[in-house]
Image (cartoon, rainbow, N blue to C red):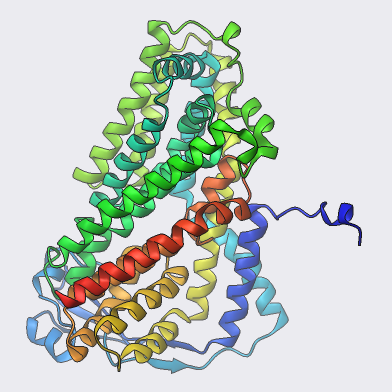
Length: 509
């Protein structure tokens, strides 16, 4: 084959990548034995514990501390009764291997086809959020507000563009460490990408500033109720245990991410051909910087400023709602739908123009919405194959005879593996902590080291796992997965080494 023919190969799109992952996971469900732990769930209405055995049989027991102690669940009863732990908790020592259904081609095909459909149903709340955000961005783009605002920002930050990377990465990192800011960041891409392109960087810099900030923040969570708090509660320790090493990891990790991104960004700004996506430069600039010719930039009027201010304030309200009021995607979507109505009144567009631009803007993110559903389909296949508990059981047996720094290091890699298969931080916490935390007692390590290993491992694989948010983020700017892997792999190695060292220090002190 000639070199010219070889050069025609192009890396598959994010949709194809996730379908390949789905096929691989489907194959694993026929290779890895099925099995489950018994699960314990608190029923607030009857004040009882409901225990579901691996075969599906349920029994009830009195909700008292003695019940938890007898089951080997080393968690305070109050953590269940006050709602801190609301998901089913795995009961140590209860793993049972289950009989698999006889594999058939028909069963495999129907599972593969049904999973993405069910994934779309299960992800409808996130999908609605993404589409409403897309509609708003479409309307604001039509009014010229983004173009005028980006132009003004570019002029004011001339020569100081790198501070954008610092500010965005750190702010999102703070959101990640405090309340798990992750899926919500999808809304930031349509705003941030044009700003970075106008500053002379490429779209990878924008993705990095947002995504690395979120990943590093959630990886080194300090008070995040969806990971640190629930994992510590389930492990039977206070969430402040191990706070010092996680705080150090947060600061050190964010510094590393910022330096890494800024170095790449400045290299691209100095020589655009150094960009990993240089071949898409024209395409991306035409898409995100439409009408950004300085001679055609609209005036940054008070009306356009007001639209951007309202849009920006709505994100502040969203963050407050999630952190303080317990909002989730239904409430966040309702907030931005309310913002849509406000913009309809002040945009200056007539009714037909407004609706048309809103629909066009939503359609721009339809591909992202589909990607979210497909990624959820991978989890559905794995749950149906009942292999998560089997993987956890085997990995827990692997580390049970280790000790010291070796134990913390291997636990870190164990959670990298578990994090690939179980992307939900709270889901992984309640499944694994009752099994893994007692191992710390056996080998003479503080339980907070297990919590930190869980966070660092799952957080690190989150930088690249196709079942996470990265493919949806890349789909927003039409960047292929291989480009992201090439960009982020050296950083992952650095963060992994840092994680192992920090965990080792946690064991020693």
